Structure formats: C-alpha cells, structure tokens
Length: 252
Length: 262
Image (cartoon, rainbow over all chains, first blue to last red; front, side, top):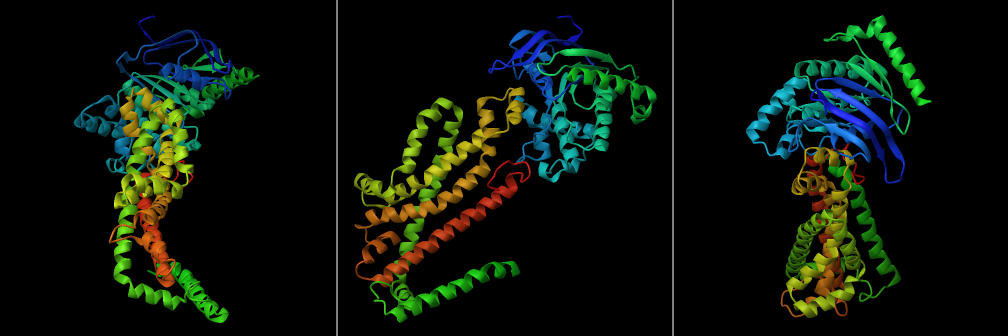
C-alpha cells in the first residue's frame, strides 16, 4: 500500500449472511489528511463501508487496508448518527470513556478531556451535566469531543448531523472544518445532504444504489479555510447541482 | 403536602366506606363471627394480641427482606453470568423457568424437611419466589443494548470485563428496578407461605404461622394477621418503588433510555 494512503480499498465486497450483497467492487484511496464525503441513495451500503473501514465488520471479498496508528494502538474514531452517549454518565465521563477503556491514567484523561471540551466549544461547567440535560446539538458536540479525545488519525463520521436542523448543521459543519484545519486528521464523512458534502470535503464520492459501488468521484476545488459565505457563491451552487445530478443518476 | 392529601384522600374515603359496608353487612345478615367477624372485633383482636402481632410482623418482614435482598444479589450475579454466553443461557434458562413455574406451596414443605422448621427455611422460600423476576429483567437489560453502543466499545477494544462493568451492568439498572418492584411483593408472599410450614416449632413466630394456627379458633385474630401482612406487603412494595424511582432519576435518561417501564 502506498505510503501516503490512509485507506486503500481494492475490489471490496460485502455479502451478508442472507447472501445479499451490501457493497460490491469498491475501490477507494484516501490520502492522509484528506477529508472526503460519501453520498448515495439510502440503503446503498455507505454505512456498511464505513463500518468495514472502522474494523467493525470484515469484508467478504477484496482487499481493505487502513493505516491509522498501529495494530495495538488504533487511531480510528467513529461518530455515530445518534450521539450514542451513555445516559448514566456525565459529559466529562462520556468524553473520557475511550481513554478509560485504553487504560490511561486519570490525570491524563482529565487534561485530554479539558482540551477536547474547549476545542468543540463546550463550557467547563457543561462537563458535569448529564446528556439528558443537553440539546440535540450539544449532545452531538459531546459525541464529537469523545471521538477527538484520543487524537485520532482517521475520523469516520456516519451522518452525524442528520437529525439536526439546518442552521445547527451548518454551524457544526463550520466547526468541524475549523478543527480539521487545525489537526489535519483523515476524515470520511457519510451524508445524504449534498450541500454538506460539498461544503466540507475535498472530494465527493457518489455511490450507486444497493449493492453500492462508486460511480463518480467529484473534486471540490474551493480553497481552505472555507466560511459560510462560500454557500452563497455561484460556483458552490454549480457544484452542488453537479453532485445532485450524479446522485440522481446513481439512484436510478 | 397538598399533593399528599390529594393522593391520600380518595383511598381513605373508600376505606371508610368499605369498613362501614363490612360492618352493616355482618350486622344486617346476622353473619356468625367465626365466618366473618365485625371490623371492631378484628381491631379488638389486634389490640389484644398486639405484642404477638408486632413480633410476628418483625419476623416476617425480616425473612422477606433477607429473601428479597439475596434475590437482588444472586439474581444480578446470575444475570451477569447469563449475559456472557449464549450457551450458558440456553442451557440454564429452562431450569430458571422451572424455578418459576413449580408451585412454591408444593416445594415449601420439602424445604422445611431439608433445612428444618426455622427462619432460614422461610428466607429460602421467599428468596426462591422472588429470584425469577430479577434474573429475567436484569438479563434482558444486559442484552438489550443499542448495537451502536456495543460498536463503540468494540472500536476502542474494550475487554469482556470492561464491557460488563462499564456498559452491561449500568445499562441493566432500570431493568433491575422494574424486576425489584415485582420481586418485593413476591418476597412477602414467599415469607408467609414459608411460615405456614416452618413456623410451628418456634416459640416466636411470624404472620404466616398466626394465620395458619388461628384459622380454626380465633377468626378475628387471623383477620388481624391477614391485614397486617397486607400492610407489610404494601410497605415493602412502596419503599422499593420509592428507592427505585430515586435511583432511576439519577441513573437513566428518560428520553434515550429505551426502557418501556419508565
């Protein structure tokens, strides 16, 4: 596998126990530090592919290599569609969970959680709150903070902002982009929102309907840092139009 | 305070009506006291035998509490073991169901034969009858976990022990509370059934024995014991429900808990 690649999939296939194909013939090369988006019709296998990259599922065919950390110190983090927080734990205790499972000392956890809270824009007195006291947007911030607390090299995001209203989604997109610009992890962002995909990523990959395979790879040439004004430019509208068209074709 | 009055007033009114109806029915139909004593007769019997009844309440409550608490501990431990492997579950579950379906009244004499007509036999009967709801509820709580949460723990390579201690066990707490609510009432039933058979030899005996022994000669005393055991059941149920809801409000998320009992 070439040195500059973080994820390299060649002819990856996923066949479920029911003999049904989840994804077929997936070829994907993601460079270190790249932020890409996957879009596709619902049920096309985007999430399945993301789970395989995370190591939560093994492909039934093809070759899938991921280079993030080492074998015993995985540097992959995953942000789920639901904030997926433990309701009996405070915000602080939720964020430190990955470090705790890894056996880090409490002092180490504390320092990491504090910087993670700050990074994601949470106030120190939010740390003691329970998830149920937070709004949906805040819960998603906590979920992001938990993913970032380990300083991942590869961040996998499975439609994390799908349940939020549009304004909140745009705000979190901007924050995510700011954090990415600061830390430059490799990011794979699954979404069904075309504007979000174009705004965030350097490339948008379009998947066909199930069993999914990539049918288009569209480069997003806008300079970083990007801000909210980008969304109202004609170039942005043109590119989202192009991705939408490709998505419509893929769904046929 | 106002809410308490509001909650207590309707049942209090009903209580007065029932007592009055009971009294006038006995007087009106001329029912013999050995069939159904008047309420005042039951009250008098209760006052007359108050020290014996109080000791009995204490003994029965003690046995029920011991049975209940051991079912909480052993039931949760059993559920921990069950949660670890499908093979253990499928091989042990039929016997757990057997434990539930075998009539406790039929087994209680056997327990007395094996362990003697003593307090420990009463506790054991109470324990057996209250164990099952704990085992089933906590096992369900340990297994009914959102797959995404399991994936989160897998992603960070949590050990089997971490998974149990940091995810399955805390996740099952609301289920334990539901099970405990059922079990607490059953524990009292179990203690009284146990005393039917085990209370004979002792010089100090529980409510079950009083009910059993007084049914032929002192009907009013038996009624007093029945009412005392009902009050005991309600008290234990009420206290465990109160403790349960306090625990829940600190523990779980009412919106995201995904537990139907809340």
